[in-house]
Image 1 (tube, rainbow, N blue to C red):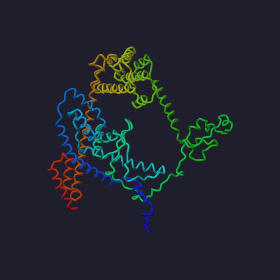
Image 2: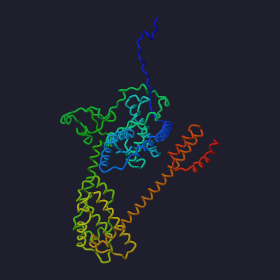
Image 3: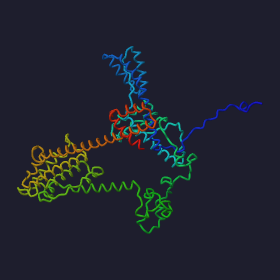
Image 4: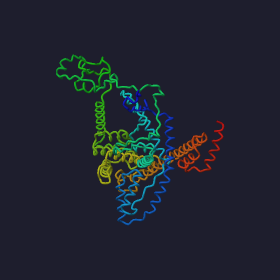
Length: 541
């Protein structure tokens, strides 16, 4: 009698794939991934030494090239610029050198991965944990299953600038470290998506440690499916019944005219929160004053508000004869200037043109300067003198070097600087009441560089130098604090590795190699003192 196996046709039983029902990263996973990274870096740095010696021996045959060969070598380097893998680049170098029958190109050495690359890897690992959590949250909202294969490569989208801003380094440095990690096989699946679209990358699945959060939280998410009951009635899903305007007007028996709703407003309003506010047409009327208005309506109201403010600002601009008359009468001797915040809002959202804004700036300058000639020992200043001063300001101030009218933002910065210089002059007059400035036209004359308003420029430069010095001191304090923090973290990491060696989880050679690559600035005497200090507490434990 034949065996059953011989009678049945041979069929390959499909292997059951292992899945994470709810993938995620716990703190223990994060720590284990970092340990795997350090072991992989140690293996890579030790495995590089022999190939680098061979590459150095190969490059010894390279000689200085003449001009033709040098130009040809530069052309070939540009051709091989896209080859980012060092092994592939060295193979192409060998092929080209055989074709030219001389060493026209040098081989590239494999670069060791240092501690700075670990900071980049930590940021990428944080982003990996966030992407997994966000993907789970999104899939649960949509009713899609969250499970993934254990052997699947989990890609993520990144930008060099995001890592560079956090670590306060340049984008090129981040790119160079990522290239080294790619060459070591720690990062994989690199794909450049475009200048403003970032790149996709993945951590090697052999190094990445992920747990199944479904086992931890005891949630069964494997049998998730899309439920239509989870759909929500969003504003764009509600059907609005169209009606004729005249017909709607005849049938409307609303007594209160304030509660009438026009057809345009019906389409613009949001759907009601309850059925009580619904009308027969499927739209709603604003029952409460606290109802949220649509975004385009609030934008229109804000635009009207800034337009009114711009008109109110331009009302302050007087005809120059009237301005001179009021200045002569002492109307602006105790003038309070417009706040910089209001002027900034005009710069950002206002409707005044550059010429109108410049007229406003000139009159603000001359009004704030009127305090200097209050109680002047030579008597009152006449209207003709103020007219002459106004014309000097109009022809010499608030211009670019080319003689053009600058942007509103630049003019506001100029006014702030001019106000500071006038404040210095007013403070000096308060300290020394016997000091009196010259007449306004000579005071604002830009050709008199040693006296008058032009002489106050040195105080502005001193202020800027002082601000730069303060910023430098603050950045130095931050740098020192960061340096001490990194040193403390380094000693904590050294302590963790030493205790790992004492527990038998790390060999002496691995510890020595780790110290050689990750703590090269630490001397042997410092490590001996540190070990003797730790050993006492370790024995007590």
